Amino acid sequence: MKWHKQLLSKLQERRNKKIVLAIDTSTTQTGTLLIENIVKLFGQVCPETLLVQADFKIRSITSIKNTEIRYFTHGKSSYTEVLEWAEKEDVDTIFYITDVTGFFYEELAFDKEIFWLVPDKFIPKVPFGKAICVA
Image (cartoon, rainbow, N blue to C red; front, side):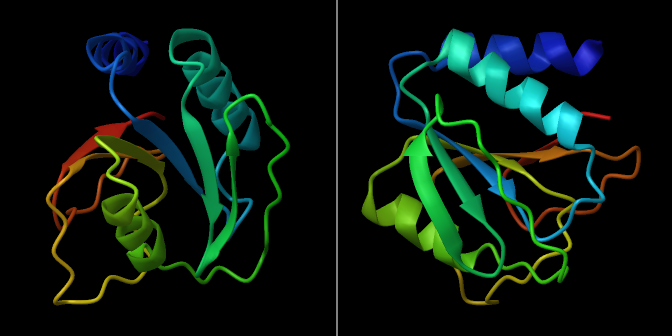
């Protein structure tokens, strides 16, 4: 329950900011019920949040109220396209649900605020931003 309070606090602090919740849809190994509950939390606390579904490319960008999530089973993910899109769209904060095993271009520079929501007890090293265990 500790992560619930931490995430809720971060959302409340950013209510008037441009927020994106990105979901790595490259696998169904992540608990889909957990992801649905996180999406609901964002929808209740920050209903203007955009929902980005991506694996190795962006699959959809919708309102957080559109909760139909489509997963793929190929296991390939890359964060580059989502992060580049967020830079162009001048997003203030990205919350990214992922196991952080996807691809990053080494020269990728990202200066926006990002929280990696890792649905596992093991938290890998993140290239930038802050990792939060949501398991």
